[in-house]
Image 1 (cartoon, rainbow, N blue to C red):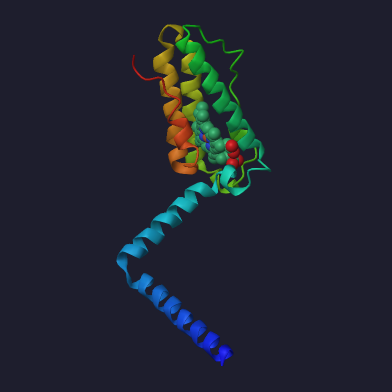
Image 2: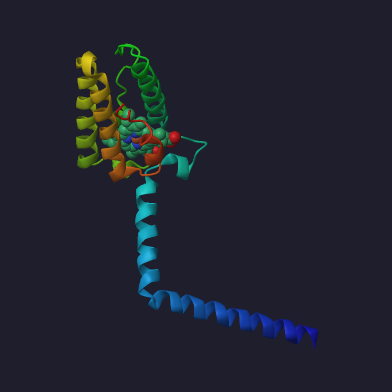
Length: 163
Ligand code: HEC
């Protein structure tokens, strides 16, 4: 008797479960939500912190260095120091192996080129470091919007706001 009751309860739960699933797929809101999270998963695909935080690829390691370097450039600018390009050498991240090899497409290399140009300009303008530093960070953001949105929250804390 007890077994039968358990079986019935299980069947009831299964019924509710199936209904919930079929309801979801016919609900346009739920479909839109599913699409959204799919798109999000796509842009996170290129990001190692989410994929495998303990076994980062060379490009991911370089990105961590670049973020640390940007942190210290920001601190130096705020202290009124002139940035030394020898202390902040350009890191050729685009030549390194990424977590997701699919990122290595024309748009990625174009964004990398624009970032490198902005980076070079920063050291060409010691009198306007704040402006050119912020433009450099903007170039980080411009690539991350397309390839790896996970770190955007961190990158968006890097610009120096107007005083
Ligand atoms: C041309 C594109 C591009 C530019 C420019 C770029 N990034 Fe990235 N970034 C990526 C990609 C792709 C990854 C994922 C790398 C991987 O997982 O191998 C990444 C990963 C990261 C990560 C996560 C690293 C980890 O695994 O912990 C951080 C943080 C980051 N970037 C910060 C920055 C900062 C700061 C800048 C600018 C100074 C910058 N990025 C410029 C494409 C870019």
